[in-house]
Length: 392
Image (cartoon, rainbow, N blue to C red):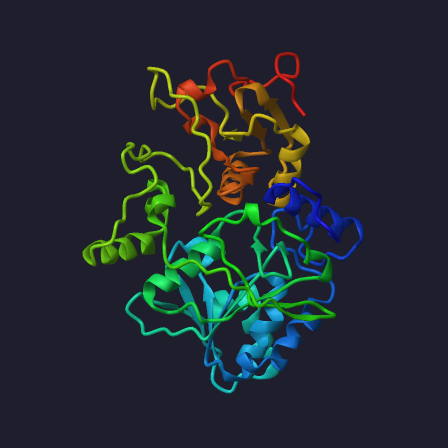
């Protein structure tokens, strides 16, 4: 499978996701859009890691929690290696150490390797823990034979690696492996790569083991100028690492440090994408006052890219399991309103949609009634009606 010429990272992601679904290569959970895609044959691809000398020598292995990597997590536990799995969205730290119960059977180890097992059989690893990772295994949406990688667009794998460098847990010599379907191995233009992008040394597919021989340097640590104040607010471990590096005399100036922090009431969760995103237009003097009379079952979605189609948003919502009963589209104002069955469903949708990307933009998602009044000017959030606004 070849990537089209003149494409962006998002174009390549969409091409891979669409192809895997259309050819029925995808596996649970589906649809694979906006995910690290699981695929038929992922377990077979994972088995190939046993043939790598680096796996035999490994004592501590960090494996991402993605579904297609479940087989590697199981092999690590069966081989009695120390298994580290990143915490979801880095909210409570960097790693969890998976600790099976004494005398765990094969069936219990299989459970430990699943996402549920990661939650039930893990303990957090603090910054002061002496961690030395011998092998890093990451998921990918696309990867090239040269070792250039594209993730799902949220930047967590890149940030996790940079944080491990800052902790002294990995070095430039620490090998990085990814597990993908053969169709995910594509040509990636070098112009798309950035300094923070993680590269891989080995690609495992159901039919191939590819040693990339990649010579492009991996991230040498956290690039603080690409970290936002909002990310610092949402990821406590970043604050700890920044304090340490500041004491060591490093430049830790943030991307938007000269700008005021978001208001405390904001529910926007910024994922660690290091792509600069357009800022919303300045608010009017009505400021942060909450809107009155807005139904509590309505969700506001803002910062939509200028050229976004409603079908793209609807597909993204389905991918997060947050499809509304009705959608009011206001593309020219770069926003939309999602109408759910009840307030509880709306609140759940807000949680599911945090960190959602369309293109290079991180969408702003919150209950509409908690938005500043200026964000609702001219909207139909208060009493949506098909005669006044396009409801889809």
